[in-house]
Amino acid sequence: MIRRFTGWHMAAILVAFFGVVIAVNVTMATFAATTFGGVVVENSYVASQHYDRWLAEARAQDKAGWRAVPAAAAGRLAIALTRRGDAVADAALTATARHPLGRAPDQKLTLRWDAAAARYLADQPLPPGRWLIEIIGARGAERLRFEDEVRM
Image (tube, rainbow, N blue to C red; front, top):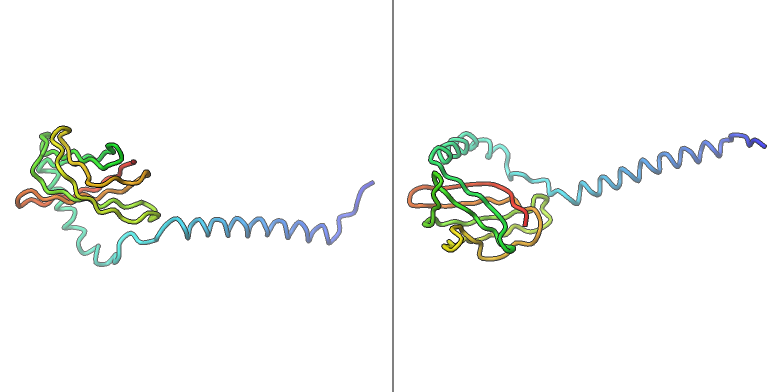
């Protein structure tokens, strides 16, 4: 026995189709709104005014041979700071760890020289996950700035 295709059948198909579309859109909008804070810089115009200077400073830092390599060490941030391949022990370093999606608050870290490991070690542990690290340093008159990421 063959049943006839009626208006009720078409209505059910349309409701099911648009129900799925709306459910997917609501799910994706919820993910988008809850996973990214939306702020990369506070004021993009002001940031653009400093961009060329920041590039020149980064080039000068690279030309001077500075390198900072972050790593995880027993739940803490460790930084291997070198200049032309030699470890540097007399710099003052701080770091800011930011969660890439803004799910966790920023962590301000002070780094102290660990002579046994020939690297700088953070004063407090970081929660597990991926962190964007901004390292600010000073050694005499030189100012250093590095950005990298690390997984804890």
